[in-house]
Amino acid sequence: MTPETLFSRRVAADPTSPMLTFYDDASGERAELSGKSLANWVAKTHFLLTDELGLIPGDRVFVTMPVHWLTAPVLFGSWFAGLEVISEPGHAAVAFGDAESLAQSDLSAVDDVYAVSLLSMARSAEAPRGMSDYAASVRPQPDAWAAVQSRADAEQPALNGRSRLQVVADAREAAAELALSDAARLMWTQPDFDATAWVHALLAPLIVGGSSVLVRHADLAKLDDRAAAEQVSVTR
Image (cartoon, rainbow, N blue to C red):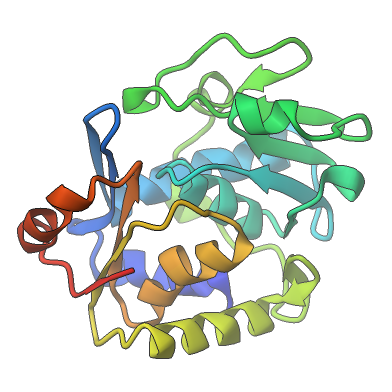
C-alpha cells in the first residue's frame, strides 16, 4: 500500500461523494471536491510534472503551503509522478507553494517554481518574477485520471526520505491516534500544515476510506455547527 494506492482506492470506491471540503473563515470561501473532481486535479498535476517538465521517479519536489485544498493535488500529483516530496528546497527540481511562503525560501537551486494562488475557485494570479502560476499551468493539462498510473515502487521515498510504505504506516498510526472509524470524516482546524499535518489531515482519513474537511483561519465559534452540517466524525 502506498499513498497513491490509498488515493486510487478511495476514488474507485466512491467517486461522487465529497472527498475534500475546504473552508477559509477569513474570506468566507467554501470549496467541495468529489473523488472524481480531485482526481482530475491530481491528473493535471501529474501530467504537468511528467509530460511537460519531464521529471522522473526519484526527483524531488519542494512543497510549502498553508491549509488549503490545492495542497492535495500538488502532493498526490507529485506522488503519482514518482517524486519525493521534501520540506526543504535545497535538492528539489521543482517547487510549489503560495507566493508568500516561496518568497521566504531559498529557491536558487530549483529549476521550476510554481506559485499556487489562494484565490477562490482556484483562480489564476500574476506570479512573482521567476515563478509560474500553478493554476494557469495545470489547467491546459489532460484531466485523464484513467491514464494516471503510479510510477514508483513502494520502497521509493515519498516524503522527507520516508518510503511510500513507511508513509502509509505513519498514516495508519495517525488514523489510530485520531480514532477514525470506517468512512470517518475528519475536520482539520490546526493552523500548521507541514509534512506531519499532511499525513494526519489528508492520508489518515484515506486509511479508513474517509474524507477530509480543511479549515483555514478557523473561527472556533463556527466549528460545532459546521461539524454537524458536514457530518464530521472527528475534529482536530
